[in-house]
Length: 228
Image 1: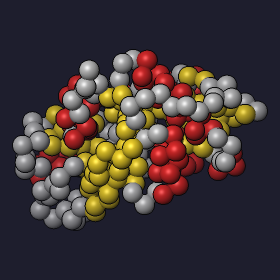
Image 2: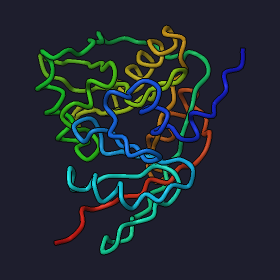
Image 3: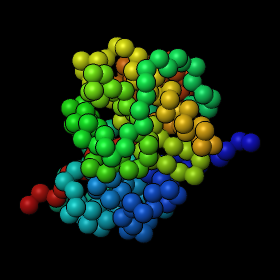
Image 4: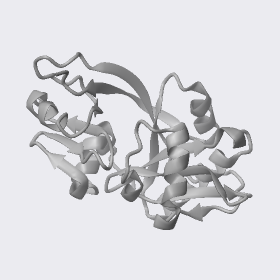
């Protein structure tokens, strides 16, 4: 059966509507993740986003609208556009898993946050790990690589936070973790997808080698809190 992919055309919106509605701040045709979970929002129906942005900016200094260019409140700086690729994979990955992979729990939280802050601090917030399952590889009792799940709709789950400690790159840890994470998503009857900045050529090549294809480009509009 072919699964319609309409939800992937506005993944933040449908994540906040389908699976993460309890983590949403709802302004009608504009929705955001609660800032403890992630700095992302989206809108539908060509909504005037200015009022929602002004309210949400009271909660978080810096955040993103994903999709079409938002209408900004007066006195805000113009949003900065970043272009990301949305990549998707339809079949399990054929890559050997040689390392012991641990599903991370609250007991691993400090290890996870420590690695994230070192490599990937901008998008990962204090409760981002509660949006899905996270998996890691330990060496000498130190978490050296992690991958997890973030946005989720009824039929799709985003692979996110593909992080390897700088001292442990080049060992295939990311490939193994992505393979494992994708396998677990497929087991739930969902399809894995991910987002990556179009300038991040190394990861893009890695994802392609694993079998991901580019589905479309996305705009991520970076917004700063109103200057006083």
